[in-house]
Length: 480
Ligand SMILES: Cc1cc2nc3c(=O)[nH]c(=O)nc-3n(C[C@H](O)[C@H](O)[C@H](O)COP(=O)(O)OP(=O)(O)OC[C@H]3O[C@@H](n4cnc5c(N)ncnc54)[C@H](O)[C@@H]3O)c2cc1C
Image 1 (spheres, rainbow, N blue to C red):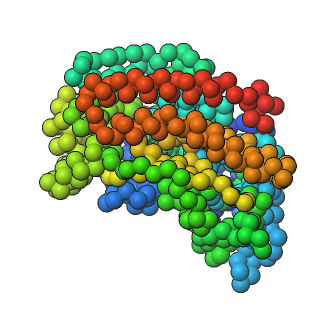
Image 2 (cartoon, rainbow, N blue to C red):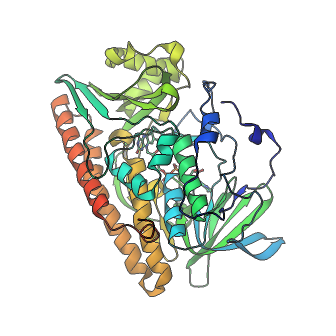
């Protein structure tokens, strides 16, 4: 990936601060210029991505750009330093501190800032940077993106608007157009480096202070045990952010969840592995291919590339890895053996990046709140990628949680009630797709698998309808 000129300059050692601009708080900036630079065709195999606990593949973060209109030294006007840096480090203060700045964190922070709260968002990564995830956004997630007001910005990045979906199995090939329902008539599969960047820009433009390259290590508690902030560090040393509420949006291996000992409330077996790679070419439609113990597919994305993915039982993925020289060879062999029609269309010379993925995908939910803290996105609820719903879950729950925190901040006596309602809503809305996910990862026979896919389509549509019908959150109401 060609580095934009502005990233070549020396950057400060400490965490970067992306301050809110003084412009309209609700205007998503034009994201096209930096994205065009990002989407130079020079992206190559070996590009680095942020790590998750995925086994052998993944490494580090990329560089950092300033969201337009933002400042570069911090803390911002809205992030008030309460003490000078000293032995214990710098101490900032905000209404809410959000740990993790990707889908769940950026969306939660945006909703809260638009509702008028001071929000600091911390991430140990630098941005824009990729992360391990394929990236189809189904109708329910599209409704959430529309409510957040970022669909146009995403389309402006060159994310193809996807209007046709195919499904091949032993039963034949089904093709359908994306129907115009709940305000959505196309789907998107934007690269995560782009999606996360657009969401972060929306957050910063809404008034959120984003500090990158800042790792959170623990929570701070008051004398009663209530969480009142976080401690962490950046390149300049320790840092502390005091806040009335702490949100953990820090992904599957959430440090926040560990710090507050958030108990698991649902645990199901981790059965499947998900792997993918990018191929250049003409990929106009979303494709699904069902074969014995393999569910594979194609998500067309930026730069005339497609994310080609395969989900299998974990044991199958590991067996192919063991019997081939590397992840690329194993992936190619898997597709050649099980999905030959798709494999025949994959020219190895067109593979743009090495195969990545997660060989064991957990399925669980955590208690998502306690005194002064909450969890959102993968930090609070994780499911296998077979239903392609993690981003959509995170966006939905970000809006629900922001509403609950908004209520708790304005009426502290109602904190427990508001956050308990968030948990209830999360579990009720996630439940049907979670259950379908658990059945799909057992890889039943193809007739049953197709039946489950039909149920999934209905569940996604029902969820999209319910989200679409919800009143707009505070802060968005003023824009409507
Ligand atoms: C292989 C694979 C394929 C997938 N495919 C799809 C798909 O097609 N569609 C879909 O909807 N979903 C998919 N998902 C799921 C989706 O990727 C996740 O659900 C989504 O990324 C969750 O977003 P998040 O913001 O909760 O967490 P993350 O995206 O994991 O972001 C967490 C952030 O927290 C930061 N962080 C972590 N710890 C700290 C710390 N201590 N201090 C500061 N910052 C910290 C990290 O740097 C990171 O930026 C897939 C996942 C995988 C693994």
